[in-house]
Length: 78
Length: 212
Image 1 (spheres, rainbow over the protein chains, first blue to last red):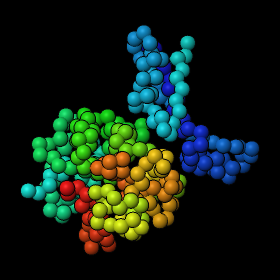
Image 2 (image 1 turned 120 degrees about the vertical axis):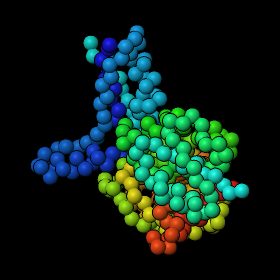
Image 3 (image 1 turned 30 degrees about the vertical axis):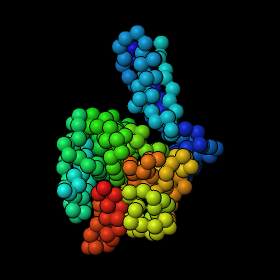
Image 4 (image 1 turned 135 degrees about the horizontal axis):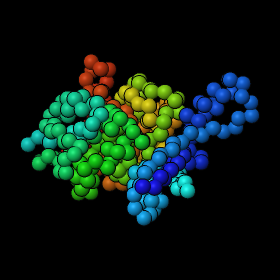
């Protein structure tokens, strides 16, 4: 089994109200100099077979990400 | 013969019973279709995807339900010109399934919003608005957390718009149809606006589109 990490983020330009709320709360706590905050999700997969990254890409295309509003990246830690 | 409407049920569907009551109020017959079914019930004339939290809203609202076995049958029904309406979570499922354009995002309010909304008819040339005229205003409630439609309004057939766009939908979209008009999705709940006791019967005008 190979560990694969998929990160899914809201696309640039798509409003991320969750990130905006967190940015506001950080400002209230006195953290200055925080610019944009964006919140996505990390999906850890254990995948068998020869091409875990390719498999993960197919999974992203078919289910894990919605290409209209989300970008994804795939990492296979060494 | 009365119209037979298949009302889908996924794990986590909430509004099934209200939808059945609304369908029966139109004089149609409601039959249940289960998410794991490979086919729609025999004699299905139209399909209704009710609201709720299918599969616990995991991953994205509607994402997992859109890949359920019954959805392949819904796609075949839609491709053959059959009428399909998705309400709230059902709208999210239809977008995720690619039967309708766009996607539903978290509300700009960052909160669950439950209130009566005024909707303006943007296109009266669909089965869902045939009893209405473009520009007419109807009153139907919303209850959702991820109800902001995102997409290209020029590439979509916008059927209903919010007069007050507090959810932050692109172009104030409340409901869209496919190009042919036989498939429609909306975040407001017409099935909850079918009885004067609940403050509005305007939902019946929309759901009348189920009756060919």
